[in-house]
Amino acid sequence: MNYDVKMDNGVSSVCLKGSLSNDMIDEIKDVLTAAISDSDSGLVVNLVDVSFLCSAAFGMFFSLHTFALRSNKKICFCCVQKDIEKLFTITGVQRYMNIVKSHDEALSFLHQ
Image (spheres, rainbow, N blue to C red):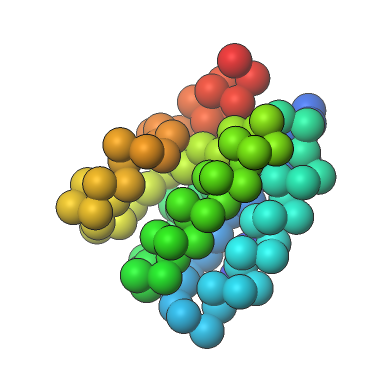
């Protein structure tokens, strides 16, 4: 798993690349938590290049969502691959998380 972190207009964006397996959960959670903390309004998590999410990733995403809300910030996922989107639907994640099609939509959501 690789990632790129960027800051633009007070919004952190993290683009994840590869497979998110159990051995990477702690590192990625630390990266995403720091990105939320460093931002003014929240975090965009771009999943365009993510091919696999382990079950622990869903728990991590919920934890990050809660952390963002407690920090008066938002988290938004974008560019989710169809297979990952199906997992979000099956697990019910999309009912609780902010998931949009494009990075621009995510930025727009965070600036509302």
